[in-house]
Length: 317
Image (cartoon, rainbow, N blue to C red; front, side):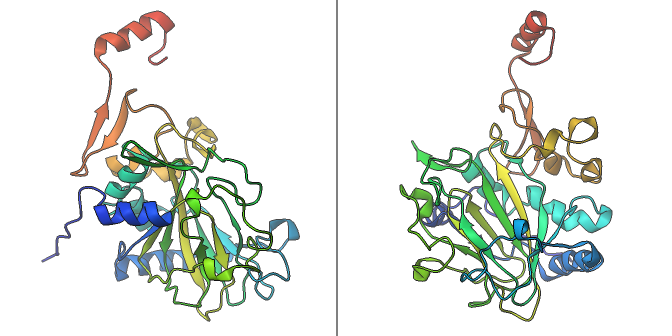
């Protein structure tokens, strides 16, 4: 008999505190061993399609700095939601019952996928990624509304949320994703040398995670990646989500029919399909994922909608 897993129906007080304190949280065991294996098997079948960042213009760290590694570039693999049955587990992240309450707590109801997700891989010695991001940009010191974290009148929001689905173990000292805890609330740019990991390394943390864990981080939190030290290839699938009216990426209208790539829509649940909606206000007929996983349309009165149609000749203003 299959075990039924019960998940919290809202972001817990512990999760709120830890995210507000650090700018990221680790959600343990979102994917089970079988699901992790399915993801890695799908990636194995497409290893030859990985693109290594060999060109200088594509490198993510400065040669000779602490985050550079010893030579190999990072490898990227796209199309993770376009692989037919091989995409089933990857698609589950869009509206995973363990994650939806946290997405609602950080992004609000009606959250949406903002970027095309992709797999990041690092072989031993491969470069990391220079520290970047920040509500106050860590390099320029300018306010960055497209990434910003805020908390006002009991409402937590991140303009853009990173979602790292860990597909291999990241033990202490292995490298990979790193973060400067609390930097989502910083009011200053970083000291010279810190973005490259050459100074104040004690303030740059590499969380220890297991395959199947998910790391959620505000893009307003300064983050990056350390060079990879393990013999096992590092693998993580990176998604980015935003509130219903926020937008950073533009791929959602850049394909045939004006939506995401057509293959992404195959075999989606209603809840998963909600997350692929373009940016617009919830009250304009946005499908909203409910606590029980069902979908409900958030709408205005029929009379107001008819008035807009009479006035503008379109369904929406």
